Length: 269
Image 1 (tube, one colour):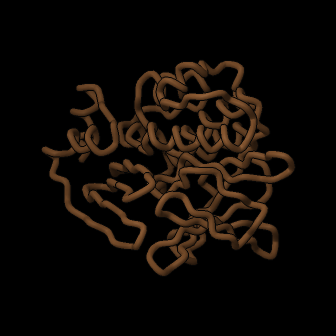
Image 2 (cartoon, helix red, strand yellow; image 1 turned 90 degrees about the vertical axis):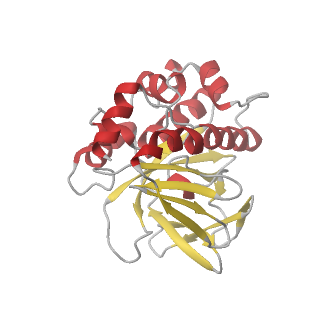
């Protein structure tokens, strides 16, 4: 399903720095997700640069593994799904509606994963930017707080079976996204990816986006605004001039562009 048989697992493990014996159990799942989110940043620069966003496993390896770039949800979670499938996990895709804009009804454009272990489901998501959980989140206990470093998550269950992932910011639980039990397959992500990479209303067109999750403060660059976000709700923000952009992408997110792409990015910044 996820082309795990075509994956260069050793190259992926070197990229993420993940070590230890790999088994289809919760300890390995947690280790893989943490290593992935630590090493591979969220970014959608190829959309801005006009490069095609391919989701086959070899293209993902060329970019995120060997090219040491990042990617957005379809890339991140398609690669993660291939890795988990290769190890022996039961992994399925889901499609979600972004809920960070309150009651505004948005289309299903976010890709996430659900892994089933001993009959219990775990949400795994390396592709929701700086708000991504860094460990699997249990779906079996809706409403139960799940701590990850200084950050706290919980899942709410709706009347029609949909689930909503929430993140604690200061004294408030903020909804991140909602998803139904319906399975999504790689071919569904191809369609969703086409919308996100080309539709005029896509949030990824026309601006720089790079983000990173962490156990402590998290970082985000959206347009020309750089933010450092704290678990207690505090945010430190500043405007990034063009002369600092390429260095900041490298320093804060580990994103190193070719000279050609760097020059093109500055022309559109």
